[in-house]
Amino acid sequence: MPAYAVIGGQWGDEGKGKVVDYLARNAHVVARYSGGNNAGHTVINDQGEFKLHLVPAGIFWPHTTCVIGNGVVVDPSALMSELAGLRERGVDASRLQVSPRAHVIMPYHVALDQLEEKARGAGAIGTTGRGIGPAYMDKASRLGIRIADLLDGATLPGRLENVLRQKNRLITGGYGGKPFELEEVLATCATWAGQLRPYVKPVDETLATALTDGKSVLLEGAQGTLLDVDHGTYPYVTSSSPTVGGAIIGLGISPKAIAGITGIYKAYTTRVGAGPMPTELTNGIGDLIRQRAWEYGTTTGRARRCGWFDAVAARYSATLNGFTSAILTRLDVLDGIKPLRICTAYELDGKRTASFPDTDELARCTPVYEEHPGWDQSTAGLTRWQDLPKGAQRYVDRLAELIGAPIAVISTGPKREETIELAKVIP
Ligand code: GDP
Image (tube, rainbow, N blue to C red; front, side):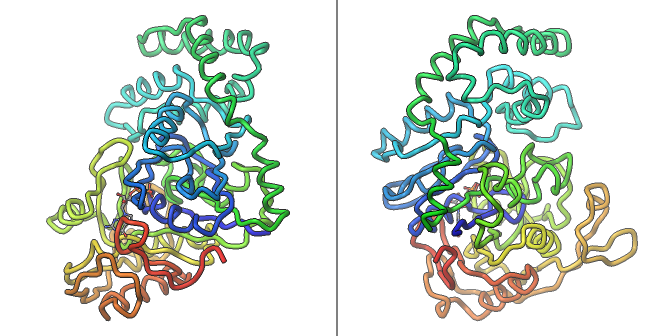
């Protein structure tokens, strides 16, 4: 049963877009399973440079079926403008399938997301303000509107009337915001239903058939393991499950279907928004990495916090997901930075630990580093292991050892072909 998961091993932005576009060459189906249009996947290939938020990064290969699973929350306007953008640039996205069980990000979710984050003041958690959190809240509280509900015009008005009564009470009473009119929201829903209808397919059947027929299915993670709502640095997390468990639930496939689980790691660490990050560099090296790697959010434009590779966090996510291999991206960003450091343990309240603790303790951790000499030569764009400088080879080998999984692919640049393949992620 050949499903292969590709999952962010850090705090997101590991380069999943580039890697999924690269790997999708060998996939029949590429499926997104969690998050919403808070994801920002950058792809640079022979068709140009693209920023994807909802559409799986396999879309550039005409032989792939791309799937948005039930675990994703969908803002139909965002999806439609993404599809229009692809169409305008000659990318055929008609093979996209969207699960009718996926929840819809409604206009009041976006309003509430922004009002709630503003009300948090200094305690803001750094949401992207796109309604993702409130949509998942409604899913859990059974107030959500699913794509199936949008298409079924009969039940929608009654359900929406109930939901709006509650939301408007909160928006006007709690936050002093402007209420939503039922008729207006219904009209928006009708437009969305018409636009979405051609893409809505029984995604679980598509996946089950593909898996039974022995076709390769690539499970495309969004965000990263350390942002998982259960296993990440709560509350500085996303509201879904980017980890491998999220793929099972977010697509409706069996764990037995998964033949490989690959973690994607940057050769250093970044984090966007608030929350502890023990290896953060607030000095010139952090600035150098940020500028050289242009570490600014694809979705929000926010400056990302940059730091040394945190092998304690990396090993935690490898263990949690059961990574069978790892992919290292942005190795080229470290060219000429000497020496390099890797965090191999933390100092917590005077004691050394190699475990990844919960959030408040993590905030008290200071990193214990080992030093590496680095390398002088450029690795940018290299495609063969033997061409990497010895210092880079040793650095990669050490990261594999610390992560606890063999490195299958090394990315040396943002373009599809700027890749060293050491082992097949999808056979
Ligand atoms: P994602 O959300 O995990 O897909 O990551 P983002 O797209 O937000 O950020 C990754 C950024 O790194 C994008 O701008 C990519 O084009 C770029 N990128 C990916 N791999 C490499 C690499 O190996 N080297 C360099 N220099 N840039 C890369």
